[in-house]
Image (cartoon, rainbow over all chains, first blue to last red; front, side, top):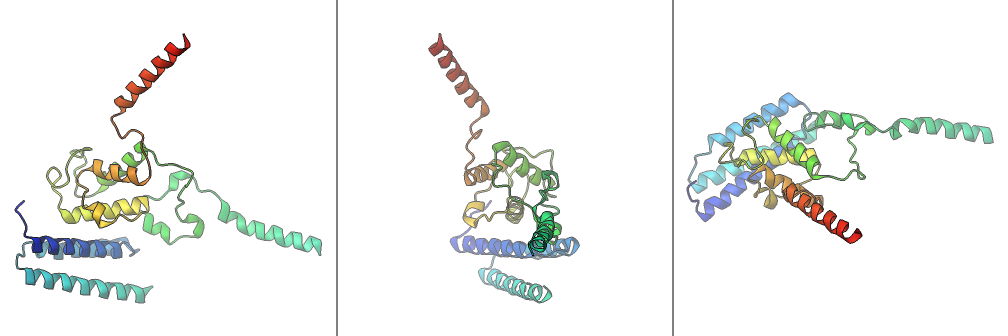
Length: 80
Length: 160
């Protein structure tokens, strides 16, 4: 594994935290199929941007992910 | 007056009874059906048996079962000391998912500081053992046996 710079390392842990938050939220979905679909989609999105190196781009994607997560949380709150 | 009170009490007792029924351990929900169970009645909520203490074999079997059921792990190559990233070919996101599954299985929350260090199944088991104050069998079992043998010999010598 190649050495990461400090900033990349920090951004990496941010991304992992985001993924963890999303997983925790998805755990609250009761429908198994729907949960799996959401999980696969999340995974796909994360894999798509796996090879980004530019810090700005990575931060943008993390922010976008956060926004999606907030939307998801909101709609789950509305549904329940 | 008295009889009606008694009848009321009886009725409430009969209402209470289904709440008190003890579910057998065999239908304890695993990580697969946990969310299905959550929706059910209050007496269907999985019980956490405070009087049943965790033991090392119990934690180990549950963790290993969980890992075997994880779809990206090949159950045949899974060993206690196989590293997730190097040997099993998982990435950091998979480890996050494993952590989430462990959290679901053991009904706890594992802070990220700790889950960062999960590199082998043994690490997870060790962490859970520390968490639940399980100390036996952490050393290789033979060590304890030797100690027992020595203690027995010492006791024999003391008696004769």
